[in-house]
Amino acid sequence: MIAAALRLFKMASHTTIVREISEPRAAGQDRPHNARWGGGLVIRKSNRACALILLSRLAHQRALELLSASTELRDKLEENTKYFRSALTERGLTIKPGVHPIVSIMIGDAAKSQKFAARMLEKCVYVIGFFYPVVPHGTARVRTQVSAAHSREDLEFAVNAFAETNEELK
Image 1: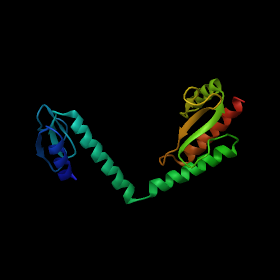
Image 2: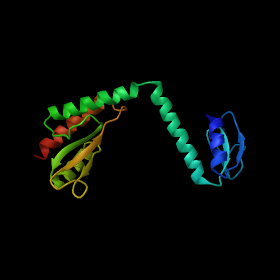
Image 3: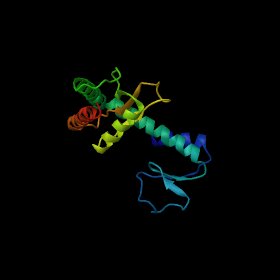
């Protein structure tokens, strides 16, 4: 991967590769004053845009490698999403239909959606309220996003907070 990064860098910029190293070293150790460490390379800064392009490419490549290696995270995300959506519905909340991890809880009134979001934050659950002009009049909502990093306990905590807040603001 480092060899491919070197080729990209040489083609895409005027950045000077000072040397390729086998492992990154501690900051400030044996490097030129205008260089930085970059995944096994000491890179002199002369074109930041090209450096960002390279780093973005490497990040995407690493993400694809992780996703290709296992479906564990995707499976956990799907499981968490199904649980969260069904638990909210069972507790009497109206959600936008779908199977994706972005879950919109329909509130209707703009002022109520903002109160709902503020009350949820007080309960340590971060949600974002959306209302006109972001969404049509009368379709205000709060939005959450489920993650594979959420535990079942995290999701249960959030569902309970949603149900309590919904009852408080009826």
